[in-house]
Length: 471
Length: 126
Image (cartoon, rainbow over all chains, first blue to last red; front, side):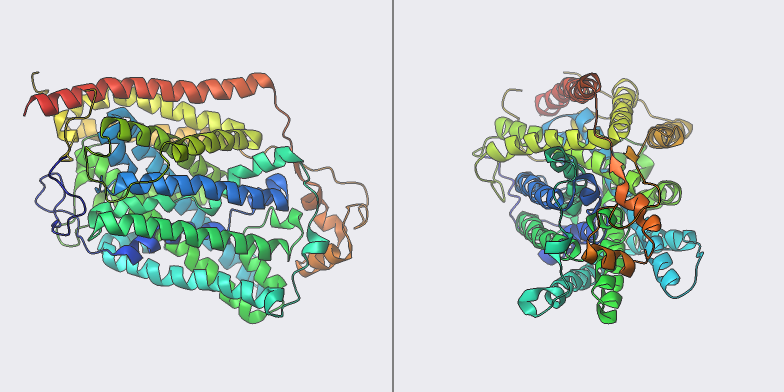
């Protein structure tokens, strides 16, 4: 077994690349939880409800649970690999060490686009929420664009200034947004004396039959999309082997509870046809509860959830872009760390206009679909990754901080669920699916035949691992 | 094995590479939008002079629509009757499968070739 022990608490703040200035190791398990849940919790506040539109209320619940199973597999697999590959870039760095450079380049792009599109979706929701509040207070025709730009610019500035302040900010607003969902559930639930939920009268049969359940898996992923982003902070966590699995698995449990509560409250307050197309479903649910206090609370919750998510997305997308720059997969200019704030500042700034282009120019459901598709391609990579990881470095070859149970069952389940999710996206959004994969094929050829010539071969392998078996 | 020394890329070359990537990204994501090919395949079948009954809404649903600001069934008719079209041909499904499997096959094949070079240089050089 290799001498290097990832579970050691003696690791310093240096990057594992021999650079003089590494990212700052200041984060604990609560920050990891906040990063994961903070990115994803917005999925309960908007977007998940398009699953209701694609298959009806019951289909959305079934999709929620199947997607929960998919993400449980993702969290288990990711926790094992990340507890060993603790470096900025998360799955990108895993792919580089386990599968190969081209896979890593693709995974890096999946991460950047999944998070940047999610950031754009969050900014669109901020604008939509402010517009809704303006209409309710008698101010029709508000221009949403300044609010979208302001949200992205403010959060990018926060990320530029430092990771600890950024994720502490996320921790606080995520906790408030999560509490708002619990309070809405408690205030409306008949268990606690509420009588506003009317499931019996509002629930209908499956409008598209069983095919609708499959189709609903598309937006069912939105309940949890981004939880795997916890690994992006691997180089900035004080004790990665403990904090990353703990934070990620606690995060998925939090989200499973929040997703089920969200579905329960919303389908008991709105007809499915409206819910399936709502821009801010939890805020609408609070409006329908008849309580002004709840409406204000869920309005604040929606705003905080979108800001926390966009905040985490900027954090994660910039780390992936930074890591690719550091390895020369992209121009090395992006691989710089700020001398004072020790953040990947050039990557943070560079991704701002891309997020703005989509936030200001594309419809919400399509931006979400772009994000989901990139996420889905990434989840398809994960079973391949973990199977190769166990084959190249069996359990006795490298000490893991966490070993996921029942291997290879989670990998095979994940692969099957990804297949179902591709079919779900194909139903209704097939053109985007093919366009996106065509893009990845073209950039893969560009990387292999052009860009890869600028990459040092051995320098990509930075982990102090033994030689992989079979090579 | 001889250690591979990559060429130094000029600043202009780096800028061109970033522009290529940006154009490909924005193109792939925006071209379907510009061509009107992206997005949900939804259709609405709004009946003439719709009533809440003809739209299949019960008393509780009507009350909820009113609370949501849809006092008139005609205003809500498009939302209520909007449906996805899930019909597809086996040919298009097969094409999607071929594209996805082909993509991963190409990627894993090229990755494996590159990976062997990395491992060879890393561990044979020690």
